[in-house]
Length: 411
Image 1 (cartoon, helix red, strand yellow):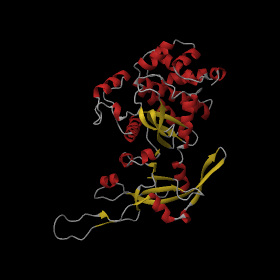
Image 2 (tube, rainbow, N blue to C red):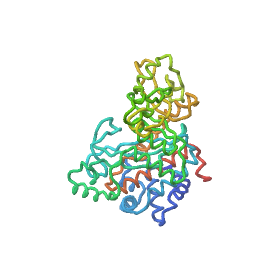
Image 3 (cartoon, helix red, strand yellow):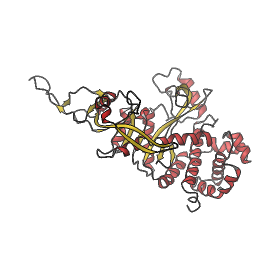
Image 4 (cartoon, rainbow, N blue to C red):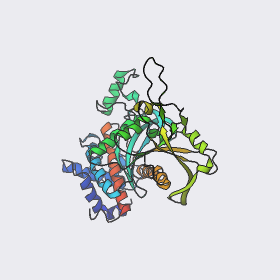
């Protein structure tokens, strides 16, 4: 925002910040919180400590102490934010995603050579899973985790120089109970935390980085949460009509138990067998250049991966949707999803939910280019979590302004 634009909404920002930081015990921390968010909203190429302090006309040391050393709980702020934005947005889904932060050095917490979504290749970066409340009209990130690679976990089996890892963790002030956890488990942990704050997931949507792991899908099912998640084309499936059968008893050994004797086939093969005649053209929303349309096939299937089979050993595999997008001009489908949405759901709604992740790309562009999500230059665990939390608060303020410019004035 320009200085004039920010001054026009200054009173609203102060009211919103007072609500978000109401859990802070000290008044000076509440003031610094509002200043930091104001700094993120102010025009400027960099949203790191020194240029923000200069634009705000405040002491850089005080701003840095608030961010990196003050013992305030980022979870408390995120809980306030989640409650407020859940009511304001009325989310159709919670979207699980992650974002990467390219780094030059090796000292920032969690930095390692790993897949970097920002570059589309392996690079030196940090990776952070997040959960967003989403509708087609608005969205907001309300929980974050910084992924800890194995080389940052002194207790990991493959860690060679444990003393060096321990020293690096101490420099970054990583809590002793924080270690390497798969990203899909971090996502479930965040979903559980949102539940502990009193929020209820209407639906979880994720790309194949999460959806391909059967443990993530099982975790959602165990929690009673429906999902639409991306999967690969080679995902093992059975047709919905597949039935268990019992082999004849040979008279010796254990009696046979019911099991599926059909050979699993891939998602690609199942859709290909239906052919182009099974495709339906669906328009799911308006884009910047007009209606967005493509061709889709939706089939009822039973997931049949090894992890799923083990989880349902001796029982019936669940039936769910396989959704595939096969655009005109393509020789085969380009995207696949599995979903536990009801069997009678209209195809257009199924497609709309699968495609609702587009809002997250909008979020990340604003979070990075406008609000300085990836501008944090500190090297502490708490500092990183404080920064992304305050960026989320700034993003929420912008979202509320877009939804209704008067909403903050009467909150």
